[in-house]
Image (cartoon, rainbow, N blue to C red; front, side, top):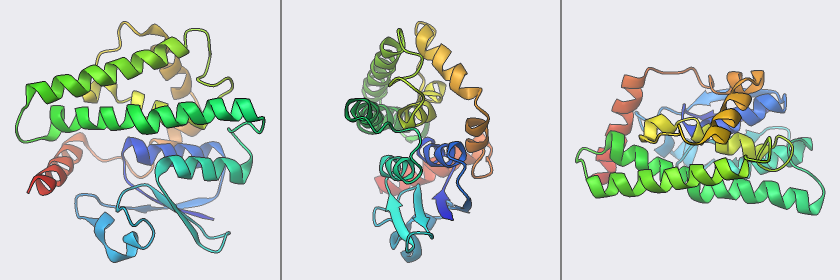
Length: 222
């Protein structure tokens, strides 16, 4: 059994989509970011960085894994799914996974903060992160020009990048000129396991999400 500690965010969806795709038994523990559950001693014992998602594999001596990319790699290796065994193919998947972890996620996350949540509008910061987010989405679009998926067959790299790329509008980025990205977003969105994964945990309304994020940002600023 996998215990999934999560919240309705792109990083959280990465883990829940993988669990659904791999058909693993899991139970969900909602981490209420608005109430600061991620900073409790109990959660910090699982993830010392105080972020979601995190998992505990109760079938493996209650082994705890934090960082969404590490979770995807662990689950893929545990099941032998969505990560090739051949060295070069495996490397390509990991490269595109790292592309999301090091680029797409951080840049779109900062675009969200300054475009949606930050109490003071800073045009230069908004433009900086939206421009970089669009550039990274354009890189995905170019890769998808001659590839159905990012690294050959459908993989954890697609799960990770899709969970963030699907939120482009929330970051204030347009993708009308990225047809390959649009095709890929729609293709993955049709997968039943993905549709189930983005409903984990129970979805909350946008107003509550914005309020919670603003509270978090305000607390960091103080």
